[in-house]
Image (cartoon, rainbow, N blue to C red):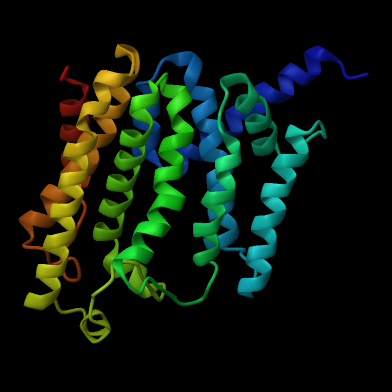
Amino acid sequence: MDDPTRTEAAVAAAYQRCRALQRRHDPTFFLATSRLPRERRPAVHALYGFLRGADEIVDGRHRAAAPALRRAELDGWLTALHEGLEGQRPAHPVLAALVDAGPRHGLPLELLERYMDSMRVDCDDRVRLPDPAALDRYMDGSAATVGRLMAPLLDASPDAVEPLAELGVAFQLTNFIRDVREDWELDRVYLPGLDEETLRLGVATPSLRARIEAEVSRARALFRQAGAVEAEVPRGVRPGIRVARSVYERVLDRVEAIDFDVLGERTTPGPVGFGRAALTGLRPG
C-alpha cells in the first residue's frame, strides 16, 4: 500500500516541476498565472507542463527524426495521461501533476484529443496552412482548446467559455504575427497568403505588410470580442487575464510601430515594454 505522506510529497514535487517549466519557458504566461488565486496556480502549472511536454516532442532539441515517430510519441504522451487518469501510477512527474489536477478541478481533459490534432500538424518537417479555414482549424484545436481547458480554473461561467477560447486564439494569432521570421526559419508558414519568395528574401514588401496589417486587425477584433469575459469570471482571476491580454496587445502595438515589417525589425517590445504592459494589466479595468 502506498504511503499517503510519500504520495502527497511526490505530487507536490510534481507540481513544482511543472511550475519551474512554466517559469523557464513561458515567463509571460507564468506572470499571468502568478496573478491568479494561489490555490489555482498549481493546476495551471500542471496543464502547462503537459502542453510543454507535447511541444518538446514536436520541437525539442531531442525530437525524433521522422514525423511519424514524433506523432507516435505524441500519441504515447496522451495515452500515458489516460492511463494515469484510469489509476495507473504515472512515470513522469508532469503526468502525475495533471492526473491530480484534472479530477480535482474538473478539467475537461478529453479536449486534449483535439489539441493533439493541431500538434500533429507541427510534426511535419514542412508546415503550410493553405487557407484561412485551415488556420482557424489549427487555432481552434490548439489555443481555443487551451482556453476551454482553463475555464474551470478561472471559475468561468458557461457564457465565458467561448470568449476564453477566443482570447486564446487572439494570443496565438499574435504569436504567429510576431514569429513570422522565426517560423519561416523552421520551414513553417502559418499565416495564409504570405509570399514565400518574399519570406526567403526577408524583405517586407507592401503586399506582406498589408497581409500582416490584416492579421493585426483581426487579432485586435478578437481581443475586443473577448473583452467581456472579465465580467463572467470572479474578481480574483481578472488580474491574470488583464496581464496576459496587456502583454500580448503590446506586441501588436510594436508590430504597428514598425509598419508591419515582421521580417526586418524586432517584433517584441523588449523588457521595458513588457514591464509597462504588465503594470498596465494590473490596474483595475
